[in-house]
Length: 81
Image 1 (cartoon, rainbow, N blue to C red):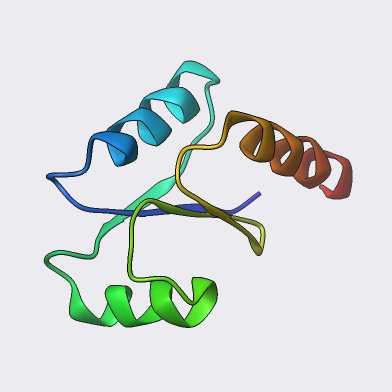
Image 2 (tube, helix red, strand yellow):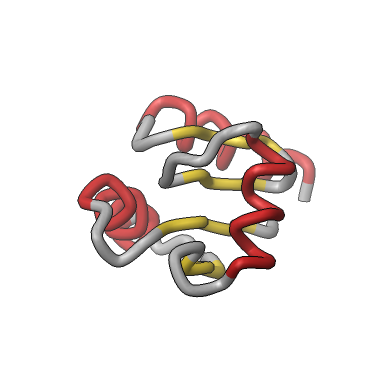
């Protein structure tokens, strides 16, 4: 399972996404798109959005902090792996 969270330091919803994944015991890679221009471009390419957070769970893109979508993508990902 590959999980990426695109975020910025000033984003409270980004913090909530990361905390939620940590509480579930899920490992993820975080990219600060405020500091990493290449990763910001990658995020926009994947999501079509400039806003954060964007979470990529095995290719499923989730915008904002959406527990139901995160849980659904995690379940699907576990079934695949």
